[in-house]
Image (cartoon, rainbow, N blue to C red; front, side):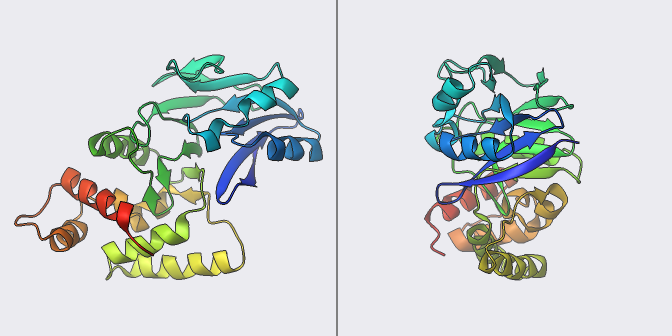
Length: 259
């Protein structure tokens, strides 16, 4: 299997670099060209593929400069008009074959954070951009709560050993919120302590596994009674909220939560 390399950038971004034994590489969501070029040069790699999950600047800001340096690179991204740099538009169910890997990737449309966000899956690797984080999910900048919940359900239908490569180091703050939402959950309490220890040692907390997220991520637990009761209490609801209502209230709370 191809090797996945973490490239830290900005304050808390991660770009993901994959390479095989042919000295070819792909990069996911390169918001900064220079750090990517530095990583490629250190490893004597040729950039053959760029994978874009969505249009925010910290995910595509380096694409134009990378294409000047590597003009033959394929650019995969959402099949909508605002991605004029994309050479291979991708829609739900498409399968792509990057030059840099020996494995195909399936395209999963995951609107919510943006209206045209996509994810790339090649078992066990899942590049999710800003849709799913460890212990959290992306803000709803363009999509609706219903869209995001549907997108997350697509992702949780994947095998439990799926490795989730998200684009930000948000885990500690997310876990603090998870404790506020589910204060009696011992699994989340233990997870928060382990996460705090990793961050004190300046260690990354991702990738994470789907099996782990299904136990500690409140945004994946909106169908459960403890979280529904928590939202009922937090928002003074007269009746128990549905799964979608629970997700909607949870996301609303997270947007204003102070760690």
